[in-house]
Length: 189
Ligand SMILES: C=CC1=C(C)/C(=C/C2=NC(=C\c3[nH]c(/C=C4\NC(=O)C(C)=C4C=C)c(C)c3CCC(=O)O)/C(CCC(=O)O)=C2C)NC1=O
Image (cartoon, rainbow, N blue to C red; front, side):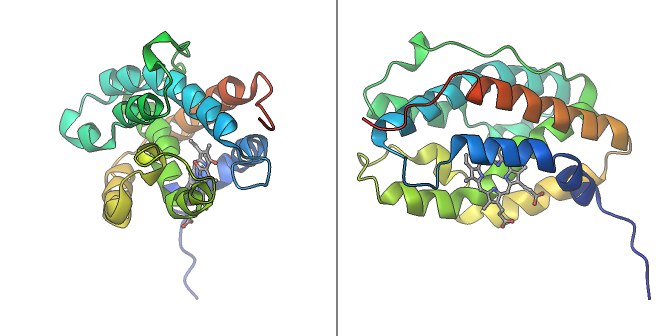
């Protein structure tokens, strides 16, 4: 038998499981309580998070070629406009305290990883009868999701400071959870 060392992805998945479950349960996008109003509120909160997070991770990662296709703030702006909301008027979340490339890669793990749920989320959103073109954020990388994720993991495995990577991921999940779930989300209407 070969005892394989856990991959960075294993370490991140195990080390953030609790925060991940808290978010998943708190957002409850897959349950029967999801309405168009609730969807718009959730998008607006994700917008506020990305508006603070994206410039910060860009500055700390300092790798525009790698980050450019992983930027999604513009997708949130687009979806909110289609739904009749004014994204520029929404509150912006202070960026999590990430510093340096290793913490930035841990932080990016959280937001890139979220594209992996895209297919199930899109299917659920399809049942709401939302206006056409209002789900580009959750569509994420679409058919390129697998390719993008594998390229992300290759870049991740090139980082050597494992504690810093995990710190960045945990800080990001914590900030995201506090921001998205701090106020009750609408349940119906
Ligand atoms: C918003 C709803 C929302 C839903 C309903 C959702 C569903 C799924 N997320 C998955 C994976 C991940 N999701 C995250 C980050 C967030 N998950 C969240 O729920 C929020 C809010 C996150 C961060 C923004 C990460 C880091 C991973 C990689 C974990 C790893 O390393 O494997 C998978 C698994 C897909 C597979 O394995 O093929 C599913 C089904 N994702 C969403 O964003």
